[in-house]
Image 1 (tube, rainbow, N blue to C red):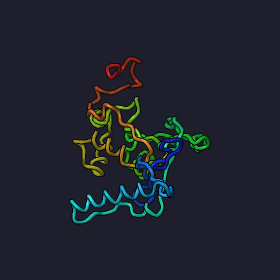
Image 2 (image 1 turned 120 degrees about the vertical axis):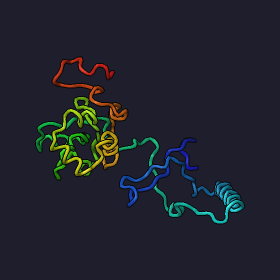
Image 3 (image 1 turned 30 degrees about the vertical axis):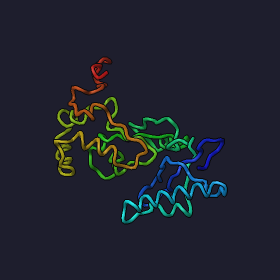
Length: 218
């Protein structure tokens, strides 16, 4: 294997392509094919492995044949994402200056699935409008649960629009959880209340009530 000071210093991986826009990290060692002294040992292992496989199987497929000619690697001490360990709550009455300040320092914003409940096309909280450099949340600590949103807070016209677009009222929490995961955001965070399918009694916090509201969630 390719070692540095007797330790693995690179992971085998694959660059971005049509199957994965961010590329892939396979977390596997890289063989030191150029080390002439080790070539007989390495190739002998592969020959034995293929012989054993062909003894059991009719046909053997060699996966990722491209990697035998050229490979992609990632240093093992690199972070899994090139981002700072901070995300900023870029919510509320936002201005262009707010986004410029966030981007100037390469900070990660957030997107809230519940805020995409309105289905107008330019709603930046619809999951297909998310940006990659963001953390996707089903809700903030101030929001109701997904089921609570439907049963207690959504307006009739919002419900009608939602049903016309989604038609999954019975599994609203599952829809929100799935929508939170299936988008381009680098990270997805789902409230435990929504994972458990709780109604509004499981709400974490209500800013219109006293400070101890929702303390049962702790």
